[in-house]
Image (cartoon, rainbow over all chains, first blue to last red; front, side, top):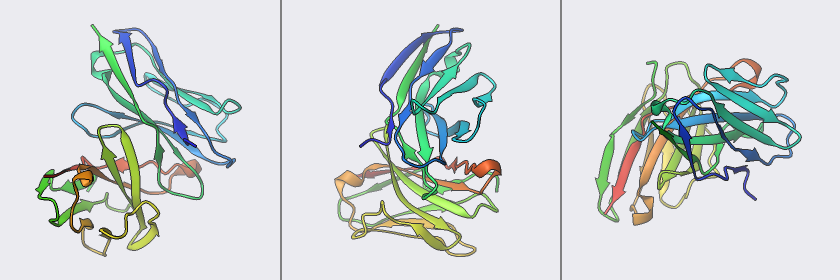
Length: 114
Length: 116
């Protein structure tokens, strides 16, 4: 079974609009961490935001926020006021307590339209 | 340093040749990870180290892949007898335990391996 599922291979958003990128996960652990990374066309991996499973508040970092719904096992990334530079591949990832490595979803290619 | 460094940036090998990739983690980080990214979306975990010790190698195709992290040297990932399917970008990442169990991983720029 897929541990991290990103069901949107591609998304389009108009500049200055908000966009939500979906991510669902599967784990039987109570303690885990959820991450979002951005990968522009240049290829580097940029850490965006983190949510711990015990964090009561949704994580926010500038224009990024994580809509964490634990019962639904979803950790959607919300980007507010999209900019052209937000066009990139976005990966959701999970770290379980038994491992240090990240398990990644298949990514969502976001294109911001002028 | 403050960034994960990977060399070389690009590597081209004929099928059957050896390939060796290097990674210098951020100074002070005790965990190092290697990931393989094929076709711009699928990330596969290969191996992780805690200092110079292998922490988890469940993702390594052991018959041809090997990796080391020796003290005072860059970490390395070596592929003996490369195959066409080894063509990918290989990312190294390092991390250090943070507050609340956050193990944010800092990624290097990657090494693009092309096997012809």
